[in-house]
Image (cartoon, rainbow, N blue to C red):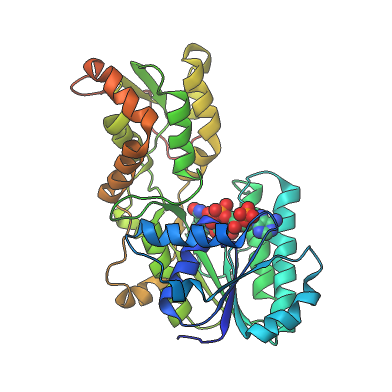
Length: 391
Ligand SMILES: NC(=O)c1ccc[n+]([C@@H]2O[C@H](COP(=O)([O-])OP(=O)(O)OC[C@H]3O[C@@H](n4cnc5c(N)ncnc54)[C@H](OP(=O)(O)O)[C@@H]3O)[C@@H](O)[C@H]2O)c1
């Protein structure tokens, strides 16, 4: 359903928020209000939106950019004073994509994921019941066994991080607000399925790739050590994120909670990710795969490799858990998504090759050490491979 009332979008200076703004400019003719923190300028915000268009080979039309209103985000608890301005602009929808993605900083997670969400719910109510779309995460269930439903989650036995706990709590606030709502839960967002371009910060697999780039490209390592189970890696391409988000916005009824993920059967595994990366960049003579992180002989391996393992531990632990997302909404939306780019081994390769091609450090490494690369990396399985990193 297209709405001509204005949409307020938080987090527009971020990765997914900017993709949402691009989609709104394409899909509607309405005004888009972007409250941003005081360190941003209007020109900086518009530049981010222009760049998101350009990354897709398009130019942002001046008349579309003119529909963007930027405003300074009020201080916490100061949102009431903002209401007359928003009423005047005819805001009928709030898309809340601002978030804190820190894994452990409880104070920041509370300020952004909880307190800001509460403030925006108050705004929605003061505006007479704006539709509230909340960007949560597919991992808000915490660690649970069995299918992960498209409903609010009960308290799990444990959480991978404080972040997932805070997102689950925010979902309860949104669903209990009395506002018409849609909760969208994307999995790990990676680059575009068609050309691999990635507009986000170094989160998820890009945190590991960025760590590799910084730590392991100044020398050639003949032997690498890793834990990489053959578990599906829950990736979602950024073009699939946009397509799924807008299909849900148009077609899902109020009160829906949507697991926005890729088709489970075609997902690459954590092992695939490692093996691809060996082939695209590292080219060691040998890789030793261990069933558990504890079994890697950390004191005996290269110090930088040890740092990379420690740095990637949380993401590897999340990736190694079995996440079984229910996809009832996505299955029903698929007829509206003819070119939905499910993540596959092939599309992951596109993203990894793009990352390597865009990295001057990796290109320099490939050039310098190519004569030492073996025809084929030897794979050594160190013991029985289990499905959990720590069990
Ligand atoms: N990226 C993923 O793979 C992924 C997957 C699932 C769910 N999500 C969810 O998607 C949302 C957006 O993630 P992202 O990847 O786009 O993150 P991002 O690029 O880091 O963007 C975060 C946005 O939130 C804003 N923000 C942070 N702290 C704020 C505060 N105290 N007050 C107001 N705004 C604040 C940032 O503004 P500044 O520019 O001022 O810092 C930025 O616009 C988050 O809610 C996240 O939980 C992301």
